[in-house]
Amino acid sequence: MAELIIPSLLETLYMVLFSTIFSLLIGFPLGILLVITESNNIWEKPLLNKILNSIINVLRSFPFIILMIIVFPISNLIVGKSIGTTATIVPLSISAAPFVARIIEGSLKEVDKGVIELSLSMGATVPQIIFKVLIPEAMPSLILGITITIINLIGYSAMAGAIGGGGLGNLAIRYGLYRFQTDVMIVSVIVIIILVQGVQYLGNKMSAIVDKK
Image (cartoon, rainbow, N blue to C red; front, side):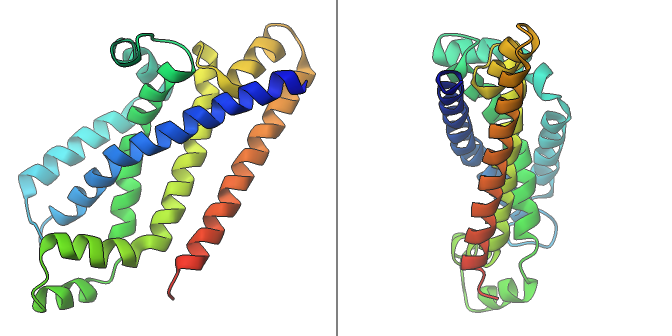
């Protein structure tokens, strides 16, 4: 059992780690832009804000399995293949990026506008407000949001196993469904649950540590 579970667990961790990094690289700037470009904010750009909102809403509307199939050619272009653990990182990142953008947007909007207005009155520039006011003030909420993103990606990676994505999801389907080895499926699900619980625990702890309040 260990010979089956451990390699699949490592594949899942590999997919989730890199898809989290890439989705944050895409979604974090988008979330910041969504906040600062809205009406009556520090870099008001209503047209850009409307375009970004529309794109993000469209991307979030795609079910992950369908999006993964659509993105097959892009995966093939980037990593040289359309199925497998590495190839799955591409659709995972693309599917999570709009979710990350909304998470970041929601967290940054929780920051007291009085703090932003005070920073503006003291002559702070837009980049200074973003990196020295918005992000530090919203850090506990941002950490919880990123934690939710990681948990969602664990679930997405399990679904990706249905179409050759690798990881624990693929193991559960290959052995639990096709070979009727229920014990492998049960253990796979238990490992996923433990993984999710561990991520949530660490996220809660980190958020509590950085919470100035």
